[in-house]
Image 1 (tube, each protein chain N blue to C red):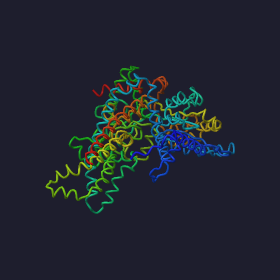
Image 2 (image 1 turned 90 degrees about the vertical axis):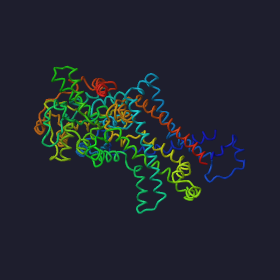
Image 3 (image 1 turned 120 degrees about the horizontal axis):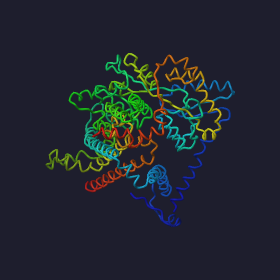
Length: 288
Length: 341
């Protein structure tokens, strides 16, 4: 899928016969793509690093590795990973049901999946907190057993699971739809039981999409602020997520301190997303 | 490098399109942007209408005042980053100090330009309790009782909540003959009773009112009165402590920007208007305490009498208070790093 790069000299590029692409001008489209990425991604992210650089190395270390910051990273990464994994399991299930079965209200259920995309996160946060607080509809069921959901890391995980669900479902669904039902039947005629069919036939085909969905869900969760601040309780060192710490640094006009934490978050996410990408590629190769 | 050239061309094209929106200067009508903090939306709506009438009568010119509201700190950062406010009316002087220092769009001595520390109307910190006051909360020292749960926002993220914290500190300081250690111990015990630290003052009101969490909400008097009126006079009571902090939300002309806009005169007139009887009456209606002597005489009785200390008296101004209490590693952080263990 790599686009044909233009030759060094313009004349030879014009004279070399090429397969005509549907979109016009490699030069124009590639140029546009790069300009687009430059303004929207590369320049803003570089500013982040430039601002952090003002701190100097020791200042950066001090801002980025304070006990409060470490506690916040642990909490943010921990709850985001948990939420992404939970979404991996249940998102797969939802996608499976939505593609393999017919039932009344299916299109409504299908549309519901996208709701966390569209809902303003603050609304989601307030709604979830209302439900999961001790006097809320769901929270009240757990409170007598000594389980608190809102204002604990568990509550944060609930919010992150909510906002991440569509990513898994929407990544897996199209792949499932193109996976012919016949191969399940073939597996069965060859003597595979249900578990073997799922484990050996369906799962390998789905893994790349599933990994992509889970890592998107994680990426969304790690930076989430709007919905979490309502349900987390924001207790320093206990339920304070990293994005909140960034906000509290900004509130002190400590721009460089805030960007220091942002840089750590960015690197953490990059490492996790890149390794997910590697897993995905390997799985895709094996499935092919 | 053809691609680089194409990028450059596209960038140029963008540069030509961008300025079209920004240049149309108003000839007749003058527009002011008032960048304010969250709970003043309704207040300024009413004041702006009154000022527009007054200005029209005085000069024959139409004035439209645009409003922008948000958390005080977030608004200040927006102004520093280039939001072109003609006037700023924020929740605490510290935020305007930072605009002066970082944005350099107003002078460092901005707070001396208008009467009463540039605070046209003030408030104080009060308590909201459940109807009938079942826990018998009368004063600050009831907030550290082990059976009382206190709701207040995180002073690191909420400017309003910083006044609450300083109110508690000042009470303890006065009660213990100026002992810092005693004040610190008092505040630490108070925050031990706080089950949820919302990011903003609105969030803690929701926690207290909607979630039913906590026995007492610490809030600005004007917001306490407003939320009790809106959310149910039959569900909550307001308790005024024996002594409290004078909450001063100051105002200032964002001079460099106003000069650039050619609005210095009208901006100044707008802020001076806030001190007139007409504007003070509107402020009192929105539960802010007026500062003018005549308005005080007129509306003073509708507010309970409470001895108030100011941030300058007890804390030596915002810059110092911010550094000692709310900066990273400050007393608030220390309280939590010892409480966590």
